Amino acid sequence: MAVPVEHRHWHPVALATAVGTAPLAVQLLDQALVLWRDAAGAVQAWADRCPHRGAALSLGCVRGGQLECPYHGWRFAGSGQVVVVPALPDFTPPASHRATVFSCTERHGLVWVRLADDGEAQPPAFAAEDEPRLRKVTCGPYDVATSAPRIVENFLDMAHFGTVHEDWLGDRDHMAVPPYQVQATPTGFLATQCLAWQPKSSLHAQTGAMVEYTYEVNAPYTAVLTKVPDPATVALADFRESIALFVCPVTPESSRVWFRLAMNDFESPDSSLQAFQYTIFTQDQPVLESQRPRRLPISDSAPVQELHCAADRSATAYRRHLRALGITHGVC
Ligand code: FES
Ligand code: CO
Image 1: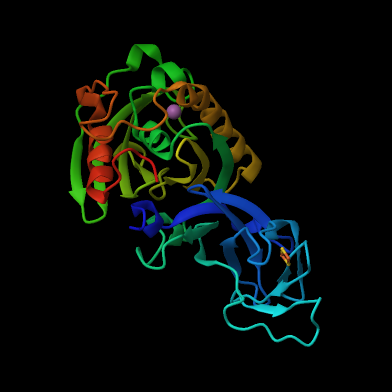
Image 2: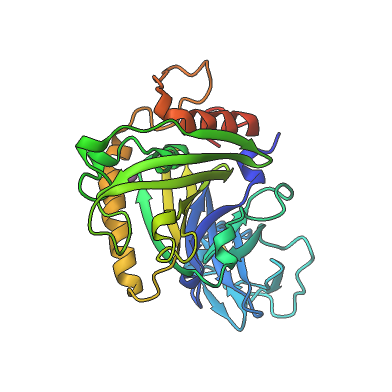
């Protein structure tokens, strides 16, 4: 059977700091996973199912750098190999006695998993991550009852600021979205000259102003917004602030979301930056969860078609991007 396209991509599944000494259960594309740290401190992502009798390994524990199943106490090394069967102390388990191990790595403050044996070499890039002049803060997770593509489209959408985020990111008297440019890139697309009126355009602003952004999509469920500094206030805009949206497709109609902020603001505590992001996202969430169908109607033959306007160029580019990847209904 062909490997689903989404299995060939890396997806975020947890905050790196959430994986400690206890096994952690998460889900990706309907696959139950257990995350844990092995003897070397490396994060492991395995099918959350003991190959002996199917118990959830996430109910077990980590002992001496090995994962112990909660049922009969079989112990697994970081390679997935069974190393101890307590009922048979003299038994040396053969190589076939092993857990299902997936590719796993840490990047951008998150744990990333690729379910297919091959596919994309690395998780999606986030250029601002390596810029020391920007401070990094992770916000989330937020669990949302809709498909991952709906959340990406919402992040790319500038036409809802004056309604959903009135007085926060926009207002009803300034809802016009001026024309912007969209160009294909080797891994997705880039939207430039994206202008939005914002009531408080920067930390130092006293009045509303137009703010310019770029939006980049370089993976199925990752998008990056970058603020283009206003030349008039360039002294205040030390460096290009960026926000990455990272979405985990938990199931075809439920998702887990993180934002990675790369900010010039080194003074505010993490908690106030996270509280602002939480406020904005909880304004989006009820609308996102109300959208039907939850799965994005990507293909021309989808049973429900949606209307587009010129302000939706990023969204139509995103749907083209998903189609080009071979994702036709935003599902696994
Ligand atoms: Fe895991 Fe038996 S089910 S050791
Ligand atoms: Co919004």
